Image (cartoon, rainbow, N blue to C red; front, side):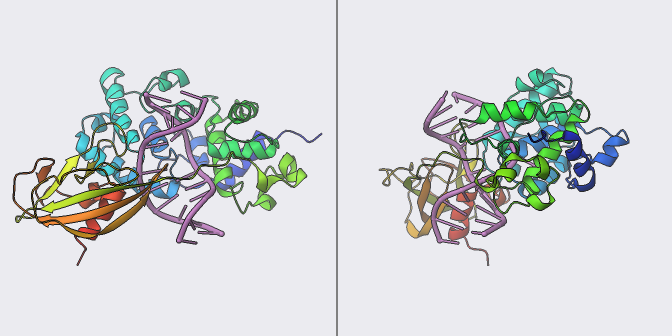
Length: 347
DNA sequence: CAACCGTGGCC
DNA sequence: TGGCCAAGGTT
């Protein structure tokens, strides 16, 4: 019988190979008694939900420069926060980020809860983020389970059952390894291992600190795990977006409804999106001309968006004129930015 | 509990 | 180039 993977071995590897991140207190500083700022840990963990470290870095730096504390963030304008989040995706995170900041600043004296249960009660904080903040910011012995941890556990314990059905079993196995000492560093160590060595493809088993104890490696099935249920195909939806420009340079924009796709984000007025272009009327009277098509893939469908453009100063039936000094293309979510770039190409 | 919810990088 | 994938949460 092979030994169970040793958390101490992984911590020793982490002490040598921990990656630098703007929000991270490295193992050396942590050992010297430096504690992370819970606000920065929470902010980074929300940004990292389903998002790569590379994509998060600059967003994290901008957010902490603009809003150094949770109270600063709580006092920010909604539109400013949504605009800074533009491009990062999953915009419900930004809406919940603000809600959470306002609860912490307004009801909790600006201090984040240190327990998993206390954190779980906050908007946008689920099982993963609650455990991560509790472990990383407060060094509590919580088990952090994300996609990396599931993959690593499926391999070291050779779990053949496919995801997502095996989630509970993988979480149970992960909990058996969580150490009482340095649980925060350990949580980051498993995730670093999954991100750099025990990757989905092209694994680096040869340099893995847990190689000797990995059941999948021993059975030669590491690359096949974790198994996953097959995915369904993405349907295609079509729609039309209208980009109206006033002679003074203002653009006709609208803030999308709070809930649903791209909720709370800036966008262009247009039709709904459906299998075929739904019946609709343009948001303002004008001589519209088609400037092209934008294709964009969302999580569960593909979009083909026809882009119309016109100059007019008529009174719109939908949307609001945004003057050019207030309009920032970077505030637009990606598909809306693609439409803008097509209608108003950079010189 | 399955569906919904973005985006960029990688091979 | 298109499918796959990432430090998930909400409903």
